[in-house]
Length: 333
Image (cartoon, rainbow, N blue to C red; front, side, top):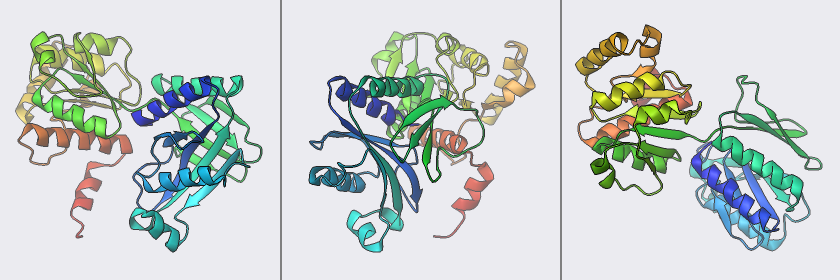
């Protein structure tokens, strides 16, 4: 899940707590190009106010128009395929002839619904994954623990839609540097929750990225505090072993999906030997650390290095092998 979905559920809770019925939309599937993946959320009120995104604008406008026209009122839960015809796809300006299937729920603000929203919100901020089940006939819903079996984020059968709800993507930056600052900008744009940890007051004073949480503690202490989950990436980008090494020692003890440290090939070899000798890390633990960090894009400037780092984090999160990235890059346009 993306951090934007956390904001969606926070807004849904605010509106529901004030007694307002809400519309909750979930992207079920996409065909062709789509700006938002399955599982993405949007919440809206009858007056057209909304938070979240389904397609980047075109589908949202069509959805809000149908609310105002009253076309969706009789239904508690329904699925709509936006862009199913060529004419509609052109009207909605969906990229590459894409089709977007969206589950739309109309929910009254009662105690059961509030509790359900609170569980979903806590799951995005927590450590475990749940499966949300919504029956298409009647609209009943419930959650159950995810058994961690390989499955798509959203799947659908004749009667029920199953949505995997997990912690929102999180990036922990172990120390502030020019590269870290660009990473923070890129990560926020990509939908990550970003947390920067640095005990150095002078570095924190010069850091200003909107929407980024700054912790004035040693990164290693923050990482060791239990602030990570399986959707967390941890990167050390300072070139300072006093910050980077302890961060890596603690990071490999977590279930973070990406761990990386900046440095050249020679610097990385030296770091690996140091972590084994002084940090007591095993070969398997050291192998979890991406070093040198990032895709090999020939990056030199801080922004270019940050781009390579975030590209590698996204590649890892999506389960794409490096060789697949290279082969796709060579395909002629």
